[in-house]
Image (cartoon, rainbow, N blue to C red; front, side, top):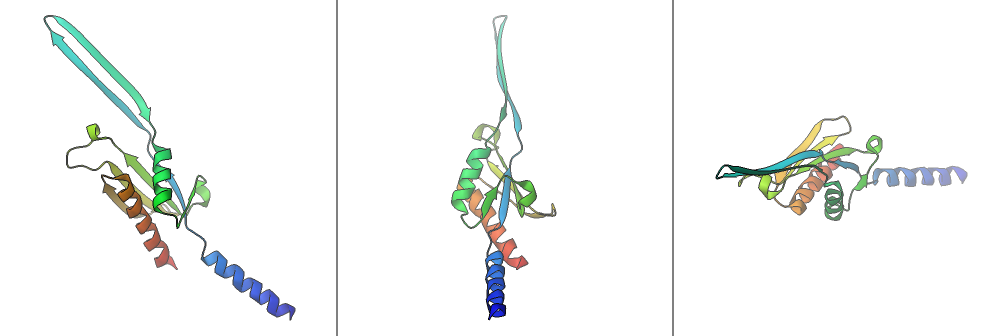
Length: 140
């Protein structure tokens, strides 16, 4: 009887482990943004330059988490199954035909699993989620 109970517990534990959500670490590349202007007229010059580091990590995490409830978003790189690098640009920095969201998904070994681009954050998040889901199901 004790052996059956132990076997049942082991089967239950293995089925729970196999149903664990994939863990995703989301990062971006901090970008140094520089902008400015210069006006010269009648021998006078006026100029202005601004520079700053742009961080959009929190918005990326929030959007991805909403679009992909089937994964766990983690800040622990060592425990992550995937790393999603998500770089964003604004309309002023994007060519008319370019994309504002550029993504690259890597597995635990650092191998590229998927890359994509989209104008909309929600679309980018859904595409990355689909790539994670498909890659995870292939491994099972």
